[in-house]
Image (cartoon, rainbow, N blue to C red; front, side, top):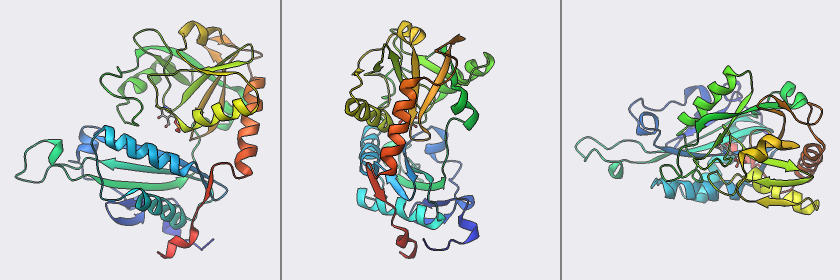
Length: 307
Ligand code: PLP
């Protein structure tokens, strides 16, 4: 791997056509991406020098952009080259790699309408981030079902990754006030949706289920479904009720930033022996073993540092 300049090792960014050290990456305060959360994004992980499901993440990013009617100048191949180069410039073997498309804002004189804004791409690579700290991985996360409901899918389509996080953030304060780590949000019908940055699986009698609607169709969720099928674990994608969540033997939190993470309490009820359960352990170990063996892997093009 090429030697990286010290200024870049904290992270490397790409903003509207230019690469720069992460500390220099800033967006205009008047940008609608910031002022209106008028932005979409995706996050792909790099472990041991390889992206995980890179094509799937870029495909989902493109679909999210289409949902929000955002169009940067870069095509998918160019976006992938940007991501490779951000990781290479930062010299990272394990990285959290984000891609965002911001609305921008209409130029002076144009109608004050999003259709007239010039959209642009931002991307960055940071040292690997996990949502769950090592001590929480060890004991299992403590969850609460929030009073706050997930924003209606008729208002914001959760399948398009977005920063309309007021519901998730409010739920996180509920969790904090109740001494828990994370909230889980329900929809209007009382079905489980997702949490702040993760999808959920409930496990009962050795069978897994994950909500079929009202959620981001997470790529870690997809990977767990593939893995469970390979391991002959029953897995269903269907509505999950709050009662099922509260009565579960195990609950798994799954996301790019951390992989498969365990929960040990829900609304104060202890699951199992107050530690990560056996289904979690099997899936977690298989997930990382398969990743180490190159599952869905795209090696980072470190030579792109010279591009
Ligand atoms: N749900 C939400 C709201 C998220 O923000 C994320 C990831 O950031 C996920 C689910 C998990 O998706 P993935 O596994 O593709 O990272």
